[in-house]
Structures are given as C-alpha cells and as structure tokens.
Image 1: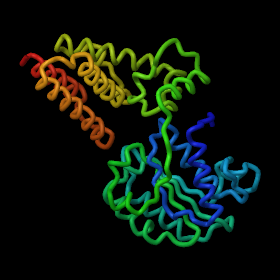
Image 2 (image 1 turned 30 degrees about the vertical axis):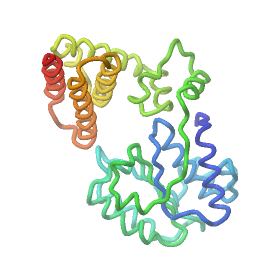
Image 3 (image 1 turned 60 degrees about the horizontal axis):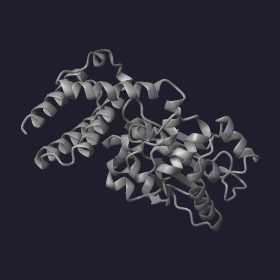
Length: 306
C-alpha cells in the first residue's frame, strides 16, 4: 500500500482504544476512498485482528497478520455493492457468519465498503447486529458520502477523528509519487481525493478527464452536445457528470460579477447535476445522452435570460 501519512494519527487513535479496551463495536469510517477510506478501514480491521498491535497498526508478523495479508483470515469478512447496491441477502449472510465462533480465537471483524449503497432492506437487516453485535465482534462501515447513510445506521456507530490534508500537502504528496507538469488539483473533487487522483495520473484516466472538461466547455458554449459524448462508455458517465459540475462551479467563479439571479440558477443546475450523479450510481439504466442534452439546454435557457 502507498504510504498515506494522514491516516497514521487515526490508526494510532484506534490502536490506543484497543490497548485500553475502550474500542467500540461499530465504527463509521466516513472518509472517501479517494483519501484512503478503504485503506483506513482495512488497516483498522487488520489492527483489531492482530495479536500484537502498536500505534503504527498491525505488527505484520503474527499468524492473524499473515492470514490477513494472504487474504485468508477466516474471521475477517468484507462486503461491497453487488452491482450498484448492497443487497439484503449479502447483509443477512454477513450477520449469520458473525454469530459463529471466531476460528482464530480472537475478534470477528466485518468491513462494509461504500455502506451508503445499502438499500433499505439491507440497512434494516444490519440494524439488529449493530445494536447487539455479540462478544468480540467489530463492524467497520466505510462511506464515501456518510451524509447519505440512514440516520439509524450512522447513529449506532462511533467515529474516529481525522484531518484531511490541505491542498499544499496533497500536491507535495502527489509529487513524491508522480512527476507533475502542473497543478492537477482542479479534478480532486472528481476523483474524491489524492489516492484516486494518483491512480488517474498513472493511467489514461486523467487525460480523459481533461478531454471531458474541454467537451463540456464547448457544449455549454455552443448549446449542442459535443460529438465525443455519443461515444462515451458507461464507466465514464459518473466522471462526465462530476466534471460538468466542476465546469459549472468554475463559471460561477469567473463570472462572479454577473447577474446574481443567473448565478443562483447556475448554482441550482450544478446541484441538479450532482443529484443526478448520485441517482445514476444506484440506478444506471437511463438515457444518458438525453440527460446530458437536458443540462445543456437548461444552461442555455438560463444564461440567455440575461
């Protein structure tokens, strides 16, 4: 795993709770995976399973650590979305497994990735286990957007305090792992954080994001959807919507002296774009081109009202 310095204090905080016996039975790791939320949840899980944890996390040498590193620890369970949702059968199966005796004689640990994707039935199925988890059971719920999690779930979980890196720290961290040719921080909101931005820089994805930004600027200016969008792949739709959101926000910055009412409407349009992004994450089978074109037409109509 790439060294992620801003996770270190959180792991130390959790390790201290383990050492003093003050750890909770369920934690909400409300950190976007772009900042290392998944890596943090895994580190906490491995630390809880370790026989000799320290302030740095798991020792990496004991038998439980060797099993977790090999991906074969029998008392560690991971759940993630099946398609676009975490379904009730997945949670029922997890809850059933957590009732069995720990095979290694320690804790039973479950990690749920992107828990905001729990559908209503799955969330309700998880509630009883959160309320009565049983002895030596730990649940770690990672979420990119904890605000979208059902209140009945989040209220039953403890939080660990963390401080995300500032822009200069992110730029410095990225520079340690990749030779930057300029400021790439514009797309941090698209990626969710520096971890995913680094991965994008190391692949073709960053170049694709730059092209999406160019295509949206052209489309908003002309009032017609750029031809490149007709060839967009399903996996790029989420990126396209997030880039459109950033382009709209940037227009607000550049035209801050423009008509206040128009700026309010652009702000609302940007909010609609993000709302549609979240909807498509759960229900992707829609006419994407029609959605894109509707945003272009909406933008044209509100800017021409000046």
